[in-house]
Length: 247
Ligand SMILES: Nc1ncnc2c1ncn2[C@@H]1O[C@H](COP(=O)(O)OP(=O)(O)O)[C@@H](O)[C@H]1O
Ligand SMILES: [Mg+2]
Figure 1 (cartoon, helix red, strand yellow):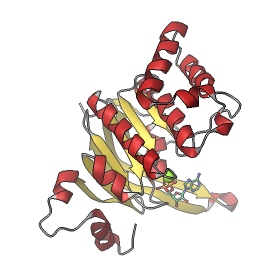
Figure 2: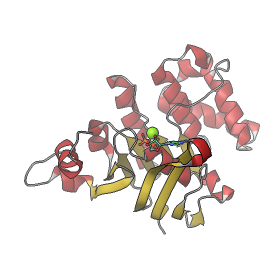
Figure 3: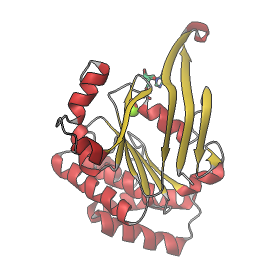
Figure 4: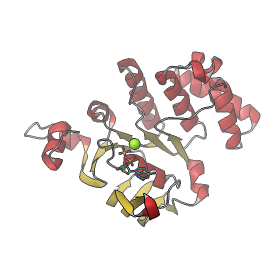
């Protein structure tokens, strides 16, 4: 069974006076992701990445189409126990330390105290985030905050990890650390679905990519197929050819 199965998804936002301004954020999008895949959802700002992720998470209702996560409707709250999510700008209470923030989130998952403290310490060890645990989130750099956010997304030991632009705003060291963390998730057999507008990161870690533009998938391919192309064209060139503008 696919981890994720999206069929003909469409999302319109209605804004303005009487909701008469319609933005089509996602347009007839279909994709499916198999267990253990690292799928990169690549597209420029406004392509519809965050909207799609929010629909998968059941935060937004689609205008049309069908989204199944582990075979269940995305709106089915039970399925969320199996998903970890790192939003684009994680909103963590600034006065909490990393440890307190993770503890609070773990409690929202009803993880018992003893398991929870063990789990926080294990994940913190894996992500190398001792300093983040002890200091208030308000003092954290973007990189540190993203680490707390990733730890938060791993806390419920999810089968599917969804990351929205995890590497944007990070320096090269922070990006490398994130790539290593995603590889760690791969080794643990997790399925990872992440969005990005940074080509290099996607090329280095994804098994498969979907190029998104104007709410539509303009290309989907295994990463090896892109890297082995006889014409040597990279993602940047392919994107440019497909949509006539740079990513
Ligand atoms: N809450 C909203 N109300 C109206 N329009 C929105 C809303 N959220 C996103 N959009 C529009 O939908 C389109 C896709 O946005 P988004 O999914 O955030 O793209 P991405 O994450 O790829 O940058 C954009 O044109 C954006 O302006
Ligand atoms: Mg976005």
